[in-house]
Image (tube, rainbow, N blue to C red; front, side, top):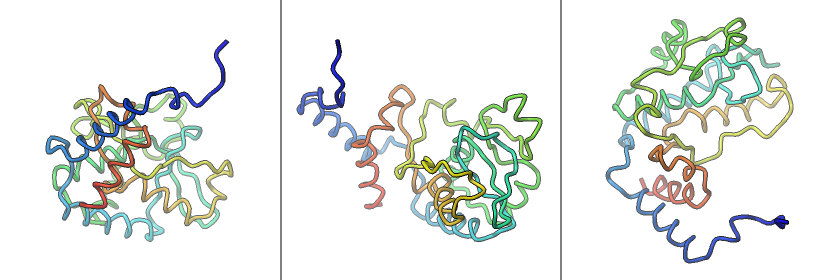
Length: 209
């Protein structure tokens, strides 16, 4: 019978140290794609403007809800459930050095040009306000990359999103959509993007940058 334990405790310290060394080396590796500092600064300002513009919806990554559907928050702000697709879209643009304005964002939303899902299920399509799906070149997975987030994006609160504090949802949106909170890992090593010590090394280099 296998005893219940924290499985990571079974890994020898020397092996954990090797993993940390790899994470540090990858964080510093010039081959790791990342946007330029000026572009990251632009996106930080863009995202800050977006969350304060009540006429624009907030994307919420929550798999239990229909992606693309409009949910009206108690404040009147519209919330749209998504997967990681809009984050991939944002990071892809930032990698290309593209600096959209808030007017560009408003236009793209009006024309349904920001991907909100990899694929929409038939049932989701019936209710979706936005239906744009992720295609190349914004699909980083198709290029061999896994997109990770430095600060966790998950919403642990089980309260309906329409009733959660709007400030919490705004911060969730910032973490989800800000390229400054993202990094790439080779798709073959996708699982490493979820390991705390790997994420910590990415956090360190992001702070230095």
